Image (cartoon, rainbow over all chains, first blue to last red; front, top):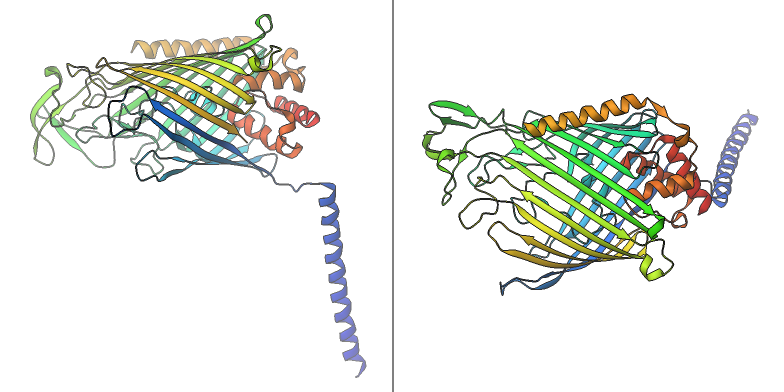
Length: 434
Length: 89
């Protein structure tokens, strides 16, 4: 009888000792792995961009506005996780100056995307992702990749309502992408579905499409895609074609009456396309790298009537006075040809193969930008006769590359507005990828 | 309407050119080594990176990131570039 407790105690001690011994073995094995630098299966890295700069408004006459300001700064960490050979996660946070008097920083989740590599031809992704429409948003926009200290002229750059994102920004949805080798050429493709844009119908904003909807604002989805073609074995040239389309009417049954006929906004469709080109070529004869990048974008929104804002005089042929809407309240309506076009073409020249270090780090830049909003809309810049027109901007830049990812950039931009006035800016930006 | 027609024609032209060219990479493409792919492809969007700036493990992560973001490199090309960066850092 006395032997049984002793046996139990001995068994317990043996069990504890064995367990401890096993733990020690595991710990020693892990220590050995660490000392040998053997990584775990998950591989990750923290990378990103930081920038700081100065903006000088060269022709402001407003005494309440400073002529120069250190207002351009930001920090944008990017998290990359390779969970396996098939599964990849990428996300970027951007913290930058919001540009308001409250000095509050703008804090945004730029993208958060999961990708699964199905096979060598197909990769599926989901989440908040940079818009694959055009080449600028997904490929050329990061501050250490963008050659200039500024961005191309974009629809919301102080000239149009802030919602009119046309060729950049993020979308929330699912994409499928891949690369197809074709002898000496390559075809790259991506198709996607996302929440899509929503149509503003209120007075003053009627006809504006609001992009970047993190929650869908209607019952429709946007479908889009891009095809890129690299025709040569040396991939110096890429030409891309993009398109996207969606019904943009909101959830509310907004109805209006034109010529005794009731119409609503729910079937209003927005269609956009873009053509982009990228040519980068080292030329030994001049010991330099030349680059040409450009993108043309156009958006067409179906014809609809919107409330006429106070003080705005539409063209007589666009005007529909005193029409009753669904609420029974009389209001005048107007319509316009809701198309918008933007274009930028930039040239870069860097004598990167010169022997003189200072020269080889310098890059000279030129960019032509133009933006044509809907000419007869209530919104957008107008000439002295109250008519809309094209905004043209010329950018001239000079970069000094301290390393492949760090540069001091200078840019001068001059913008010609439809009313005949010019806006001239000088920008300095120091940017580094990390 | 004219712009839509031009776009459609351009789209068909690209597809036709690609189809006529036939599928599969040529030997000219498949025989490229990592250093050559690094010098030809990175430059298209940004300056060619210095291999010494990141560790072997980080280059493996960057390789997948660039495959998805640039969407213009085949699996084999990405592997060759990553191996070159790992060998040269």
